[in-house]
Length: 301
Image (tube, rainbow, N blue to C red; front, side, top):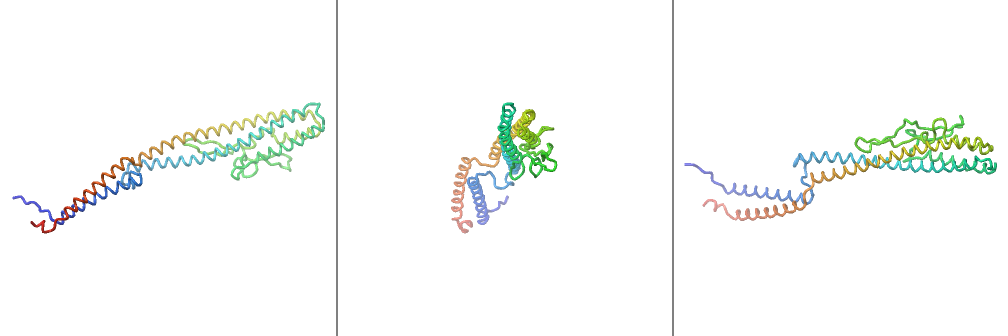
């Protein structure tokens, strides 16, 4: 004869309580998903999804770093381009004045007046060359001092910052952009520099030296080409930065969308599950309450 174990009152009660706790836990999990909007609250609940989310978060953080580099590069290059354009305009004015003064019909008084304006333009160009960005020289490369200074000892203009001084920014994965240019690269072309040429032009104007004025005019024209080449270089760097920013933005949108797919719940489905599990829990409560109406005497019968 086979013996069947008899279910005790206490055992049945414990089993009912266990089923009730399990139903409550499922309902609470559904409530948590609806309230947080997340598929899981701890990585251990979904290890593969959490690992994928961690990689996506690293990518998003890296894109944020690139974004800061883009913002800095964009600001630096935009300011440098603006300052360079101001210098280009001043070069045009110098050319107009020197052309006017180079004719033999220009009087000494008129040339003297032009010399005064040329001196003012030279000061403006020096101020442009010594522009700063965030408290640091803009055109001095990696140096901390002014980009252009006059050395009274040697009676010459000195440029700080070598052409090999490159300030670079990583603006995207595998994309490093040189965001600097020195005053020497903008305002000199080997043997000549604009400040010395303007000093010579001023001397020629005050001494009524037509040949000297014409020689200075030719040098200004050559230096203007150098300045324009520098401005084109700044523009090309800014274009690279903007292109990198566009690529980063596209990758960021995709990364955020993928992160949402990995971590976020479908709110409609989550609310449906919440209602279903809540009803199941209420039903379990009713069944357990009904079962607990029996007494120990009922089990002994």
